Image 1 (cartoon, protein in one colour):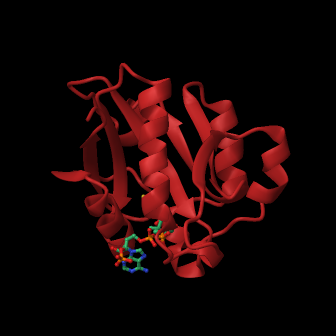
Image 2 (tube, protein in one colour):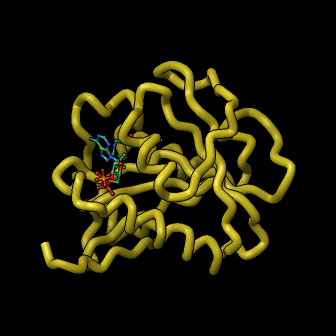
Image 3 (cartoon, protein in one colour):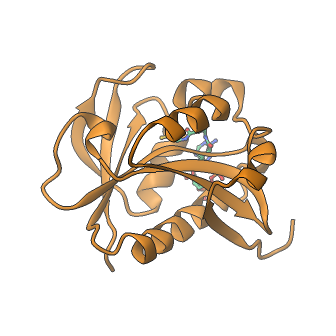
Length: 165
Ligand SMILES: CC(C)(COP(=O)(O)OP(=O)(O)OC[C@H]1O[C@@H](n2cnc3c(N)ncnc32)[C@H](O)[C@@H]1OP(=O)(O)O)[C@@H](O)C(=O)NCCC(=O)NCCS
């Protein structure tokens, strides 16, 4: 991997799908994100769901969804215009190289361009997901102190980050 990998994000399109479908997390991480085939199919069915690829030097290494109706993140309303971040992952072969951190920076820059009216970005992360919680804290997300109990793998923290600089 080059010393300064070029990490970008892009809406999923047909040409990216075969490589995206090869991506997976470690077995121990599977409770925290659905398999990408399931998530991609679900995103295509859900209005307001944007399937996004994380690219390293042009090749897919990760994935996430942006929800324009954030109520589906935690079954609640948000006081300010808010987007939801869901299903964020880096493929197991590419983890622990700082790429999720770079991807979150690219993700926020992309949202500022494409969703300038949004004030906040919200997500839920399983209370057992220490790597995810550490990553999101370092990226400026703040734990609201609220627990969401709707997930398939136990309670989740609701975290929010302001988008505007
Ligand atoms: C969470 C995840 C996206 C991190 O990706 P990554 O590219 O390995 O993360 P980075 O290399 O950018 O690491 C950023 C920080 O995250 C934390 N982190 C990442 N992996 C970690 C691990 N295995 N254990 C503890 N902390 C970890 C650390 O604080 C790390 O900073 P550091 O390396 O300076 O200590 C990745 O582990 C993943 O895809 N997990 C499975 C899916 C998931 O849990 N997604 C979140 C759903 S809400």
